[in-house]
Length: 250
Image 1 (cartoon, rainbow, N blue to C red):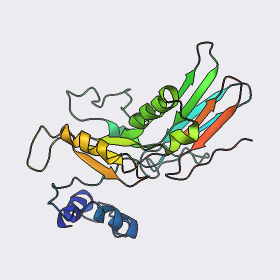
Image 2 (image 1 turned 30 degrees about the vertical axis):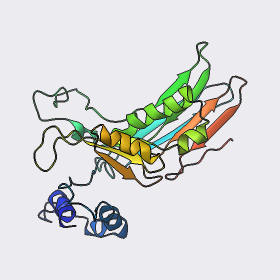
Image 3 (image 1 turned 135 degrees about the vertical axis):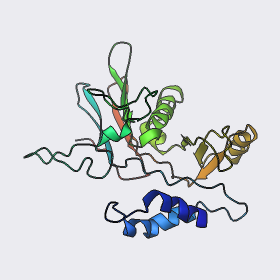
């Protein structure tokens, strides 16, 4: 518990004249419960990293019409209220995605004039050979977006899941960490998997040397929205039960 508390401390604590410390958030029931759930009573934990504070202000939706036109749309201001500046007269907030730049001159994402920063946003559509619409999908989720979308495409195309089956299916996510608390550079991150996956899978992955963590049954950090258009023209949609979302025909 101390390690977790200090991990949060190192991330948020600072001179309140210069740092906006959200005490209410760090002491909220949801935050405390989430952090407490990371405690393993049977073994000492590695010194945990601060909780991932990547932008959570990302929205995804899709829309399609009877003529087979579709929009797969994702938008993000990155942090809450983005850059805290709105275009006058519009109410449209500017994002603060420039924080995605690197200050390492050797990085391909090194900041430079006229350059766009790397970011995590991606959305997708799949068409048939004749150009007709087959699948549309996407999700928020920072660095797990592309991991989620990979699983969604495999489930839809290879495993022939319906959109709702696909949205509800167990998912995994890999979180990068450069080293463990001992300084072991070979430590290459944590593979988190929803516990609805058979335990044999967890055991197999662990035996292969993966650092595996079990997520709650629907604990994956995504909010999937999906559409499939059958060859007969039928539209089928699905929405992720992990968070707010809805599929509707209008």
